Length: 277
Length: 173
Image 1 (cartoon, rainbow over the protein chains, first blue to last red):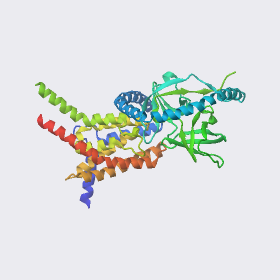
Image 2 (image 1 turned 135 degrees about the vertical axis):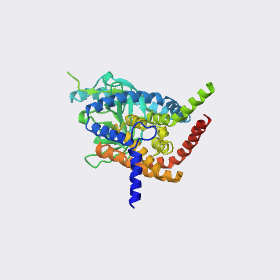
Image 3 (image 1 turned 90 degrees about the vertical axis):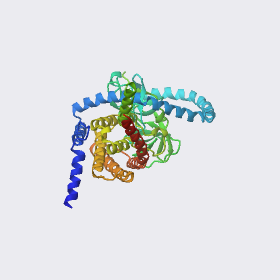
């Protein structure tokens, strides 16, 4: 019994404390260093933050370069897949286009009326200059849903700015470096956005699921949602302006986003502020 | 002379293979997630680190592993240090298995790999959820562990073949 415990201790000591052949550091030393980094990072120690910023700048650029061959393969695969469904898409789009054309005229009137009314109620309707950014890293991690863009504090990117794909909301800025920034996508588990569900006008919170869809959470009353209801930002909490389209109800509380987050190449970054008279 | 130089260069390149593959995989997240297969994901660095730490520990420096972990944290968006801690723990587990094993077999390695991945993933999950208040999907992690475990045996055979290439190139020199 004693001997087997001794063997265990010797094996552990040899594995963790002794420096191996051709190793400059012992495992124990580096494990302690990792724990130290974690603890200091948890308490936002300033030196760690500087190291983080430096490493992030370096790694994001390197990752973009290393990903080039893989991205070629991925894009080729997506192009090939798209090629086989072009004709069906064309027929659907032709029909949609006809319907949309008839709606545009009505919408123009509604938009101008809406702007006029929002000015009266002092809503957030003024946007700052739009910044177009290229997506540097889009890894589709199974745990965290985020992308890295090639604009940072150098380009006046700030925390909390809205990130759009065309007119559709895709996420918000959660980390700003000098030349890069990280966008938390709406599909991430940690994403919570105040929304309005039209046409009934229900107020609620849209949460990511970690997959390619979202769920409606924390509604005050029992609400009955129909498939096809549209989800917009509500403007509550002064994070985003109201009325940015996000997605549609697929079934019950499940939301399918308008934008395909796996296909993001360029995104638009916008900050919203009150109009000054 | 030139032939000898070429042979040495090739041998050096082969020896650097695991490190290069590790760095490419952490910078690039080599996990086929873009295929959008429902629930499919696996942790390639875990397989690579465990295998090479077990079979040829001198091919992966601990310092390089530590830095690869930092890169992975930055790319994935985890707090700095989580992946380094996980990678080094895997190394420790593999070193322990190496020390206690007299007659190695792929089945024993595979079973110990399951224990290692479960222990290391549990620790990483606890640190992220309890210490950093991250919200992670538990089911996703379990599925990731299952796929990582299942794919170990395939990658272990590929790495074994690669290891034989290194050994034969060493003998030729």
